[in-house]
Length: 386
Ligand code: SF4
Image (cartoon, rainbow, N blue to C red; front, side):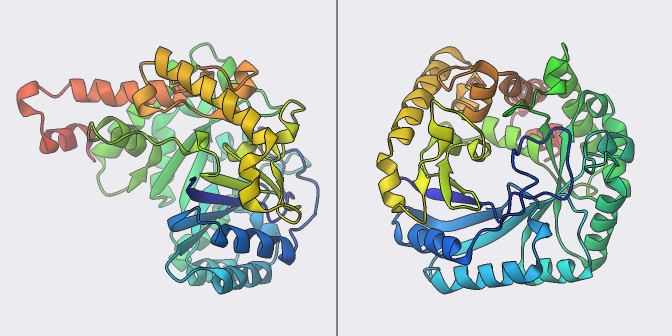
């Protein structure tokens, strides 16, 4: 029986800006999810027996803040009314930050939203890609939003998409986060997804660039304790490498229904959230069914799911047999395999070489510097600073 861990809900596909690396195909559409669709989704999820103790709901796949606060007040009240009392539900937003104002800050605090703001570092890096439809940079508006969040004491993390230029500037990136009081940082590399071909992946030495960037950033981070509290890529790599032998690696991206994604029209997909909205005739656009028409639990027998799962499993088996990083990866991300290799039934991608292999190497290389006689928690903390 699956366990749902993450629900990605597209309140609207619309985005008020037009990032150059965006893969979302319908971002000019102003469609909005209907209340009835949300009711069908949450009532079926809550009745499904596929739940653990908690559920994370991410309002994403478009810019969530283009809808009024009242939309989310109603939606959250609906979720509350339907939620089983023992289930903890956490709502998350990933936003471009350009629409943050005092009212939104008060709402984020009141609703205890887990908030992520996308900002790619200092203005000259950010404005290369994160632009309006007329091509103007959005840095000024995003940083104004971040400063307002800080003034209101609203906790948030940032996600920065790295490019070859910013990867060559670890110190500048680090100084930027410190100067802006940004305490929690996540890095993404620009990926090839859908029709978008990554500029970073064309760089011959992208893997070395990423390794050097993360290594330098780690060094700066440990040399200035207390300034940045969390760097996702380093913490994740550490947790995956330093874990009890008996703890299996769980890859939710390859488990059916561990992640459920729903678009504004009620179409349901699973595995990598980015699949929803992409076109693919072989897998019928990755859509398992529609929550307004189908019973959620019946989607487990959907022919599309059976076909996708079979191919994903072949890819995971190939990874298990061929890749020495399998124990810290669990077979990677289906969406990247499809985008880069043309099939789920495959192994390595530029994406996994950069984000998984090189990040793991960095941690292993750091641990190698600890002499065997000093290999304990304190020694690990001294090297890693974490
Ligand atoms: S690192 Fe890449 S090749 Fe290795 S297990 Fe993960 S996805 Fe497969």
